[in-house]
Image (tube, rainbow, N blue to C red; front, side, top):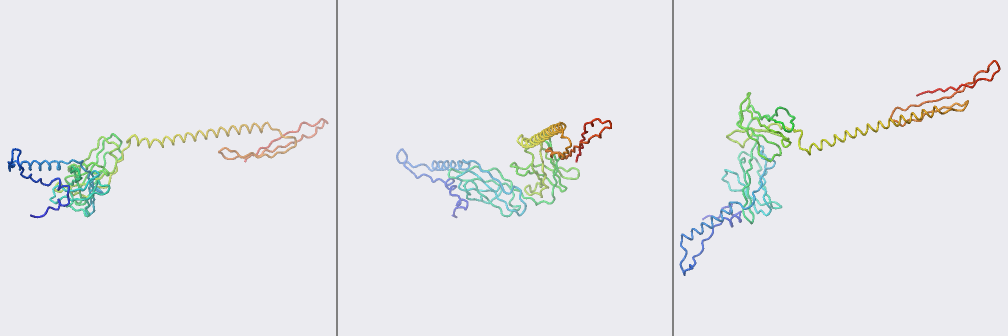
Length: 357
């Protein structure tokens, strides 16, 4: 007989859980010496074996999470890493591709001991498909993870186009349609959103207007629909082999979550308040300047210089935020000529000359 299979040699926990149970040796019966019948021994062994296998296969640990980096759609020839994350204390992780006869790939966990990686260094059509993983610990076997669908782009010729209707600006609560089109015959279109955890949307193509197309309706639109979208095309004969992606389409959604509106309204309100305060300050400064000028003019009108005195006065620069005005005030006293009748001359006349520069 050949040795143990390789998959079992790398899995000591599985050996302990799934190993066969040796039949009990013949012991004297309670009545004094009768051995157990072969039928009873076989039934006992079968019951214990089925019980152990059922407990292990059912999965006593939570199912792990599986994902791919840099994504689930990989161009031909590029590397991809599959991650499987369970709980702390996992001793090994196993990865399997649905429909494959190859044994499960086994990896030891990375620090801190709750996940492992499975690397594909060169993406080809043979690596596409549905993958699942599970892990073992001292307490048993986990449930299988959800399926990870690994697709390859660039296999089919042609590049589809992606557009939005009725327009690129969408308000929350409205309805919008993302239209994916191709001039080449395709069976299915897939719509991907960058960073989305959910699987892509899939629709069968329809021939209309000389093109194959699919209309992906989003209604009602919410802030969660905002993001970057791409679409691919595929054939029913090879659903995991895709075309090149369309150009990215950015879908902005206005009127989103209350938190977003709060961050937008704060600077607008602050700007309006700042403008109002500046206008009030300007009006106050103008009023103070006018009052100061009015008092200065009143003081100059009340001032009378002595006789025969010439006064050159240059106004101090105004502190008002206006053009600076200089004025020169010259006082002159002109005596009247003596009267011919010998009467005392009249009072001298005072003239003021004001030059504004």
